[in-house]
Amino acid sequence: RASIAGLFSCTVFVEGPSAGDYAVRYLNGLNLFQVFSTYKQPAPPILTSAVFSDDASFLIISFDSPTNKGTTTKPSFACHSLFDFNCANTSYCQWIDSSTVHAYIDGFSSHCVASGDSLHISETASIKAFCRAANNMCPSYSS
Image: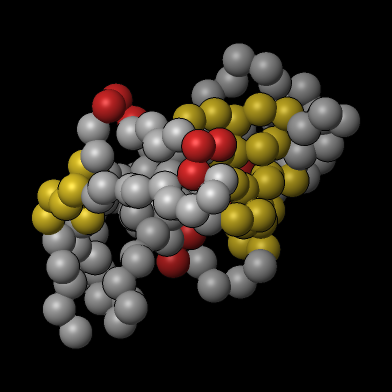
């Protein structure tokens, strides 16, 4: 099945007895939209934040766009498989959705994780953009 990619225009007409009750507005005054091929690689996800939950019982790690979840298949996984931070080796993580991870710090104490500490994607992690292709054929997506 071919993917139809390109720049398209769309014109909307409002008709009928209540047509006067509605107005059509285009973003930036343009009626153009772009369709990308499912085979076109999106920008790699960016780690945007790691913050404590409201009760400080776990970290909420967020990306700016959907990920491939680092190819993890289990509901919970060892945090050190995807992330580098103090106590990552003894903590477990859980994907909440394809852009959000909760990190449950084992032995949660000030020596493990504190405000201002750094958290990075592990050099061995393979976190890439979520594959939207129907056949899941996105092997060339870069991290």
